[in-house]
Structure formats: C-alpha cells, structure tokens
Image (cartoon, rainbow, N blue to C red; front, side, top):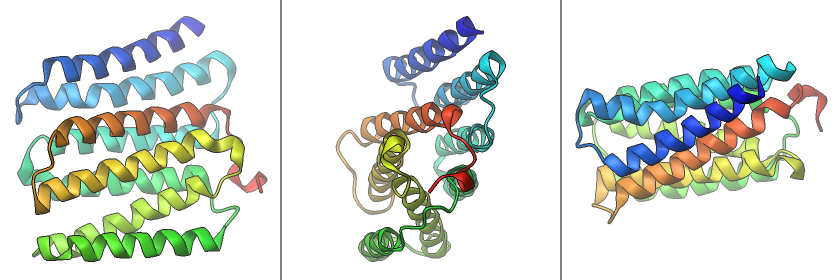
Length: 216
C-alpha cells in the first residue's frame, strides 16, 4: 500500500500541475473535471493511508468528506451562476473540517480575534454585495473563520493544518474581492495556488491525528 500512497501524492501534484499548465478556458465540463481532480486524488491518498497502516482516524474520515464536498464546490465555481451552490458545498466542507478538528482546546481569545477579523472583512465587502449574497457571504465567512479558529487552536505539532487553514482564508478572500468588488491581477492563479496548497496541508495532517476530544 506504500505504492498506492506515493501514487496518490504524485497524482495530486501532477493534476495540480496539469491544471495550471493547460489553464483550460472556463466554463467547460473538462475544466470542471480538471479543477476537481486534485481533491479526489487527496481522497485516494487518505484511503491509501488507511489501507496501508490502519490510519483511518476520525479526522481522516471527516477530512475525506470535506474534500469530496470541496470537489463539488470546485466544479460549481467554473460556472459563475453557480456561485451560491459553490458556497453551500464549501460550507459543508468547512463543517466537516471543524468536526475533524474538534472543539478542544477552545482558545476563546483566538475565537474573538478571528470573529473581529471576519467582521472587518465583511464590512469591507458589504458595499459590493447585494441580494442573497449578503447573508450567504456572511454565513459562509463565519464558517470559514470557525474552521481557522479550530485549526489555529490546536497545539504546535498541528502546524500543518494551521497553515492550511490560513491559506484557505487567503484564497477565499482574494476570490471574494475579485468576484464581487474589483478584478485582482492574476486572481485565478493566486486563488487556486493557495487553495490547492491549503487542501494538501489539511489532508496531510489528518491521517496521524487521534480523536480530538483526547487532545488538550
């Protein structure tokens, strides 16, 4: 099963490279598939870990679900009119990641800091939003901030997932500004580069993580 793990990692790196190399025009079903393939390869990586050494931890299970919801969100993002379904898919992914990370330790000061940071970002985006996007972006951003809170609240050995959460936040902030407010130079490259790095780090963290309620 060691070979399966290496193959899944190689597929992740190769599919990321292929996506950036081809830079397929959007929207198209081929582009949607190419954008989702790296996430599906990470699902394979987690399953290969489980088959190889029994590392099917609760965190790995929930991260797998999060990656699958994320792949649906990736496909939706190809079509601008599916932006709301995209947010729903990623909101479900963040719920899965929060569940994988657990609610201990709480670090309430960190929760307050991230809540204030998201409030500032939301106020900045507010003039650009309208209609259903006002509550949708607000709710999605709250879940994104909650996911970052749980990742950053983990002890220092969990630096991998903490870094992944910050990259996820950066990716979504650039995407939101580019989509709603004003064009960002090289937005697609920035968004997808930080996004794939974030998902890769979250997936790499999951297999070696025990039940979150046993960690303090």
